[in-house]
Length: 303
Image (cartoon, rainbow, N blue to C red; front, side, top):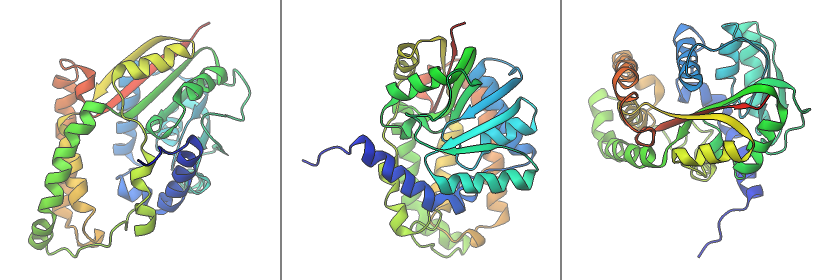
């Protein structure tokens, strides 16, 4: 039986994968720097915090990637000064380029989330999106988040895969994989080489090793409380929208991007937004968080 990877091996593969994927990351995940992207970030922030966010003087983003959350929160004036960390230096280079294009100033630090080279009590907000499931030692990471928060500071993380939601999402992914050849023929789209959105096939093979957790809500509550955080809250987000989105993303990943028609992209985009509204207005208020694909957790430091 193969031994599980060590924490250092997990960090290494995450660095190498995200370095290789950085150039195509925004395109792969449909990251938008206009009004649509701003709406998505502010919507998730409001959900995570349970209402309209206050203004934060200093924020720290963990696993910031290309800057999706920090840059939009800076643009919206919710954050006055942002520091962004990531284990991938190339991701941070892409983030800096995005910030320059948007006319924003941001500090970047290439580091491990479990050992932040930052002073205690430095930030009113510590946040992240789709990052906790990459971290091998979450107990240590949450202690670091608590350490660098000011007394009374806020922490929130969104976009974390739930264990049940991850299993449910595997159904549309498998179905899309089976349908992909017929779908490409119908759209007259050429088949793309494996890993074309991940920096090549060799880098794509690392993808299966970068995700090390899927959560139940109590996992996230436990890590936050054990680190000394208070007022811990977990919410589920997106059920139908993720089934729809994963199916379409799985199909599109098999085709040359320039061969995917504009009408298909509009159908996929507008369909996702419509189902996201349905999830938000109806299902997220009535169903247990564990059923949703994404979990978000928020908490506060004592003081």
